[in-house]
Image 1 (cartoon, rainbow, N blue to C red):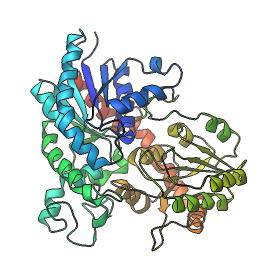
Image 2 (image 1 turned 90 degrees about the horizontal axis):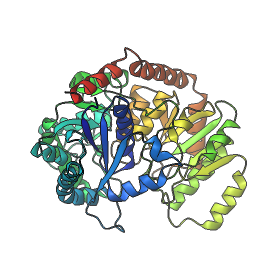
Image 3 (image 1 turned 45 degrees about the vertical axis):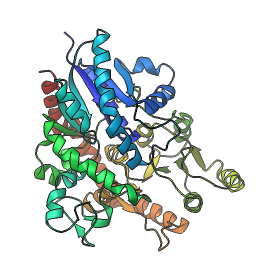
Length: 455
């Protein structure tokens, strides 16, 4: 007999869609019927980015969509604007979608597995008699900081709007990553005006999270022992991955360029610098050029993911000349299957924005990091990598905020040449794989989730 019908709802951003799509594949493997709900714009991108035959590889995940309330031309990388819009428009549309699913004769939706950042959907679910499980796509430490915000305000570290009252580095509990008060998870690069909207969302979600019967996250016990001791009710079920053969689509917004995998096959083991800054980071032309020339200076083969919107106003003549110079040495793609790249034996280190998905994917494959965070929880993840796990280093921007080509070259050499970093990265890889294997803590917690959703 088929198990319950589960509605899965991510926050509308790539870093939230991917782990929830990976979880959806795992739930389908366990017999659940899954309807995966994206915003309309991202739903269209996911569908168009599916590889040939990709719809079949979805394996029974039904893709659905609801409007986020923004016009097609509006900037969805403006997170505060996106939050303001979807908080007002999506609840009514989600109700309608559930009614349409039932009117079409499909099984009644019994559970919502909702992104912890979409707490409004928990209220909609309760109103419709749907049970709720909450999923945190960020680290347990990030969720812990959000849940402890009232205490941080009470202690005078933050004001009532999330701004720092004291200029200092704090640590919530032993074993947790130290974090400076200027780098809280709700800080947005270049858009401080919108910070209060994100902070208000977090404050609301802290209360709405009580509506969930279970809270799970894409992490593993050994990576965040301090956070899980502080909040034992947050259950790690990661690092999540859809399938060992990388055949199941995980909801990418851009088509993957598979040529880079053949290029990696031709490189020596442990030689390639892999560079990717996720789906949100934007570089100005000067920083882009410094990064490009820094990669060239390393003299090492590199694979660099440059999204179409990664930088603006770059000189086409400069880019053409650069590409001619590095032909044969480096390769640039607009998007790739990062899990496959990081699992490749040719990769020596990962120059990363430290989004949590990227962090878990690097850790699961034992890849050392060079950290270059952009915003939000990425500074916290950098702190894990450099201070707690010690599986990488961080770039140091100059007084003008620019990371120079010499700084990049120097840090890449330090990361690749450090035997201790490599060894610790290997130990964390082993721990991650043990946790998700037979008898491992993440697999046991995933089984708890399956049993709950089967009730």
